[in-house]
Length: 180
Image 1 (cartoon, one colour):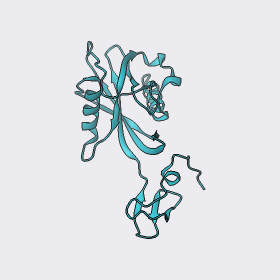
Image 2 (cartoon, one colour):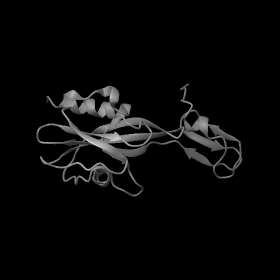
Image 3 (cartoon, helix red, strand yellow):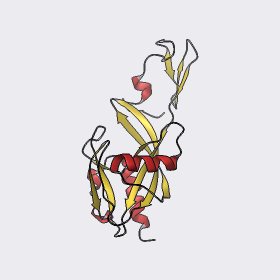
């Protein structure tokens, strides 16, 4: 049997969000069910995007998180996909919201599971990573939930300062493919 963190929804939610009953049961996998009204709450991952912006000289962009979770650590531009939004549109929107950079091309890198703990509750994501070229001279204007943006050579990244395991995995995969 899998042991879940104290922030897992099965360890945080005690009452049915539909009827208020205290008879909410977890199936041990992904469903919280109410014995009184039959309501089911499925714990499924939310899609999110992570963007590696690449300059012609090979440097990439890291952003510093302005807010929790992981405030002050480095991240990639990106965020949650909105309801009824295409993944590709989320890449364009998030990059513009966070850095005022217009993405004109993108290549899919891969998908990476992540646990995002916010205000004491785990939200599970599937982070879809994209590599997007930016023209030399593209200026970065940090805004939204970004306090700073830096251009860095991939080999100079200090992974101890990277926000989430999924972002470390994305960066490591990207760097491993640079030699291909």
